[in-house]
Amino acid sequence: MDYTTRELDPHSLSENAAVEWESAGHDSLRHEPRQPNSGCGCQSCQHAERPPNQTWNNYSEELEYEAGVNHFTCANDQLAQLRAVLATPVTVAALRGGLATAVRVAIKRANAAAAQLRKIPRSADVQRIFLDSFGVRTDFVPSWRASNSKWADSGELVAIRLESAAKNLAGGSMRYFCWDYTQVLCGAPGPTGYRAATLSGQSQMCIGQQFWQWWVGRNFESMAAVLIHEHLHDYFARFRKFMGVIHGSRTSGQGGPLRFRNANCYVLFTMRLAGKPLTACLRERCHDLNTAACPRVAH
Image (cartoon, rainbow, N blue to C red):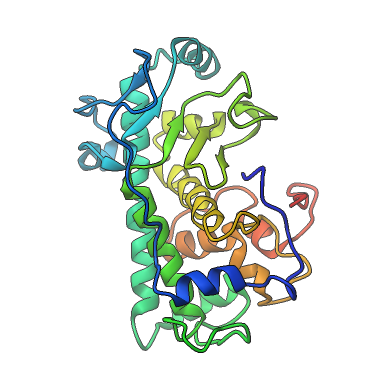
């Protein structure tokens, strides 16, 4: 969920900001990670050196310390609110450990999807799922591709962006907030109304109720899908202050430029390629369908 991006006319913007960045050889966010404990003077801001001693079914090996969750804040009042919502006596260490697991799963999924796109020739499954997700074949070359681009076709472009999201996930600069119930950081509707919300270009993410409910149910795949989605927001926001990943593809047409800026399409491709269940409304959001169960988003 991104409160600061808006859909712009594809003929005036298209992928120009992204093309300029990626053609110059920048395939990931390049910013220095914050020093441990920076910007946090409270005891409830957790920068654990060791993971919680817990086992999560088949994901038990994922619980080793992850640099991607260097900054996780959960104040006492936030933790109390979250405990009440989840009806579970959770601890900050356990929450952070669950987030670290989801981060690592997200990195694996994004990198695995990118690797499949890097393989030439691409498999029939990759072609079929890519076509459903982005509306074109992997070898489609957009008219807005710059002559000096480091990518040859749409498949390589998507691979670059998924690899960049994975690097951003692992980089450790994102600041995660467990329960922004006061709506100070991420605004309305608050954590009961979103899975996660990202402040564009600020490397800050507020985590919502559905995300933590998935954690209680050990559904790390859905958590990972949300993390890939949100880190794509953060990635695109750094191209230009007005450039961001959107949630809908309307006005773009099948395979239009806005499909390549739709965070849901990247997640749809990644999770389908991995053979994992899709989160609710994911395909509808990518295809900009308007149904009773999945009404069209406003941006």
